Length: 325
Ligand SMILES: NC(=O)c1ccc[n+]([C@@H]2O[C@H](COP(=O)([O-])OP(=O)(O)OC[C@H]3O[C@@H](n4cnc5c(N)ncnc54)[C@H](OP(=O)(O)O)[C@@H]3O)[C@@H](O)[C@H]2O)c1
Image 1 (cartoon, rainbow, N blue to C red):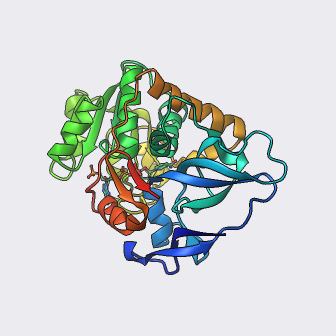
Image 2: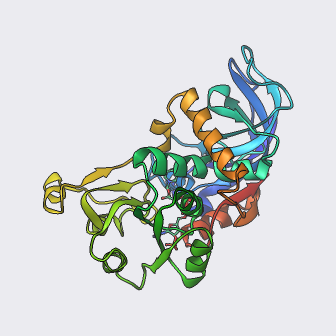
């Protein structure tokens, strides 16, 4: 059996992604064959394509999608042919029309959640979930700083934080993004390309700083983030959109107020089936009860993944982006 898919044979820019026919094996023990209906675009996909996150070549790419089960392998009891399912994890290979995937990392999509919505929110929604509930349990009334607030994770996190009752400061790359972030729960927006975000955070908090900074931008912002924290505050570096964050000496954390730094990943927070299902259900519930509303930022044909990556890396996208098989 064959399928159309995006493959990477050489690490590099978006143009290294090739639209090809590849072979699909039959599902083995505890695997299913999925006919994919919507694929989530994530910044992490660019790290595997560029080599920032190493993976053997040639490699398929992508970690998030929704679809319908077409065939089940031996031993599969929790899922059947025709089930609508979604996932947000390895093995890489969601940029494909058909694919085989292990059931351990799969969840059923509830009837009231569309395939597009599931593909848009699985990875970014579960990331927002663990960041604001588990990495640092944000409480009502707390002021927090969230970088790249108009991005995929950003718009979901802003709404999640708002529903908790937090006062959200978000950094954004343009006035249009600032407006969008505010419409999604951001109380204060900072244009961090033009304004000094440390000074702005101090101004907004009357000099006190914030107990937590959520930073997915990395290289360009992480160190300055330490100066936004109140004593004993936590810097959460959860991404590298501008490149890897620099090393931080423990001594620096002492002089800046007994601070903490963590570099979390969704995959260590949802490292058991129970945690994955619980996290996904939290996300679906947040959508169901109206706390989170998702407007898909843009849809690209899967074969146009090159353009989607160019737009994502050039900071031209907002919110959740889908690739359509
Ligand atoms: N650790 C985890 O568990 C985990 C899970 C999911 C995602 N992430 C991370 O979270 C971040 C957001 O992911 P996403 O898929 O939702 O992407 P996204 O936020 O939609 O896109 C990245 C955004 O980062 C900002 N940015 C700042 N400097 C940039 C630069 N030099 N190049 C490109 N973008 C830059 C841009 O927003 P502005 O124009 O507003 O600055 C851009 O839109 C990524 O860093 C990703 O790796 C981590």
